[in-house]
Length: 390
Image (cartoon, rainbow, N blue to C red; front, side, top):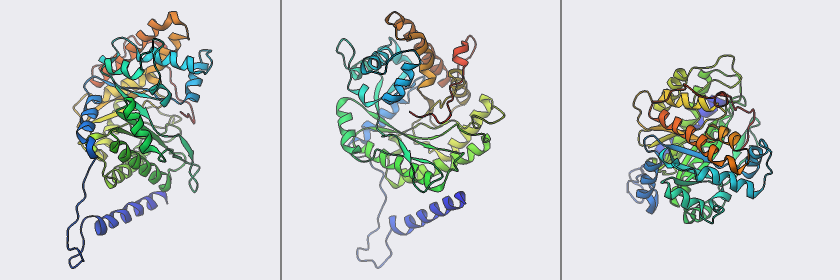
């Protein structure tokens, strides 16, 4: 029923476009032909340049946009209190790592971090700029239950987004992130897919209108025991809907970045897929759904181990792709770093070296040159958490 409703939804939308958007009938009062324009206002050139900068060879995104509550869970794992001082200390460790810009092109920040400075009084955004890392900002307001769905969620945050985006731009942010989720065990219902796609499209249009390159992220959760073929089916459905509504909202494709899930079996499926199989399925989905005008595909890790996420990315870069295929990892870049740091000032340098090791590994994977030889057991440990929230 869900897939039938979904098909009807797209069909009716397409008919509406055919009859209303492109032209008027002869004999109408105006007699003029209408055209659909793709626009991003006064920021078009800057958006394209920003997207290209983030999607540069051998580099990817460090995602440190966890909410204060989620950051608190990370800190608690090493025995630290969740207060602003500790959050600042951890983010300072990450953002001031010497040489990070060689492997990292962008950093997604939580709002608190965008306005913070180092203990020496230097703004974090300035630290990033000096390292040639583009500052980004998480703009969504989190997930809430979606009434009328199969116990699914929708992402809130469109109210006031334009004014917030303008302020983030003034503070130095040049790209944005909005994460919504799709659950395979819950359906997904046509309602949930449409809501996710429409919300992402409105956010993308508003972001571009205020100078921010939108990262479009409909995360298909790993939760479930479904096969990789089922994941492919759902991913194709979701991305078809997303690009339909991006076009409806006149979003400039050259000025966006995507943050998709890799196409994998559900985390509880009886058989694991090899990196080669995951690459095959994921690239198949992308080639069927993503226009080559999009400059960059920046994968999320979604609870994979550090090594798994890197191996899978490497497998996808064994032959040329129409887009820059790279990473936007949080846990898959930070897990070993956090364990090395332990909240101790004397461990900062060692923790920063651990970050560089993971960043370099994923840089090599983006170039298709990574080898897992010599990786530690910690880096191979899975990080999937059922029902994980940010």
